Image (tube, rainbow, N blue to C red; front, side, top):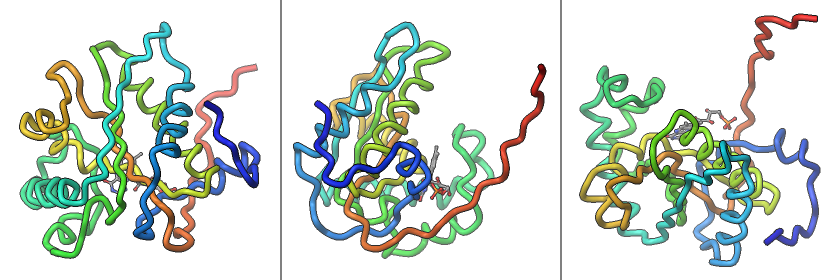
Length: 201
Ligand SMILES: Cc1cc2nc3c(=O)[nH]c(=O)nc-3n(C[C@H](O)[C@H](O)[C@H](O)COP(=O)(O)O)c2cc1C
């Protein structure tokens, strides 16, 4: 289903206006909107047309709080073992924030959408991340804010949480994304110029 957009943004506007949003209004996201985001996600290109994704939606505040507290405990002790967890570096300051009882790794968003990968293969996770970007751009076009929460992955892929979220053993969480109504404008970020290694003509 193509979502109805009241004030359409151009594709380039949507790309260039996207920010990671880390402050949300308490307003919930309704089911129709979430389904529209999922429909946009699955329009991503997919290697060999495998469509190797499935989705988990968490809108339960108690569960989100519990997963956040578990993740904070993981990261409080992870430190130099980030690499061992195959995680991107969380950046300076993340360790300290895990000690703050008010800090939620989900930034107090009411909705978490987890894109999960089915099966194995060199391009399965690539497909899931393409779906993730589609979902985030669609959310932006609808005036919603998103943020990838890579720091949730160890907890979401723990056997206990997978069982709670009905994620089968052969499916794994790849791209956790929080979604919500932004509480205000998100901080602008910069990018380095594209590093072109070769432009062979
Ligand atoms: C794979 C991945 C994992 C990320 N994990 C987190 C995270 O755990 N917590 C968080 O607040 N932001 C997370 N981010 C968001 C990045 O910090 C953010 O994209 C980056 O700082 C650039 O900012 P921008 O998205 O606003 O341009 C993640 C982004 C990606 C792509």
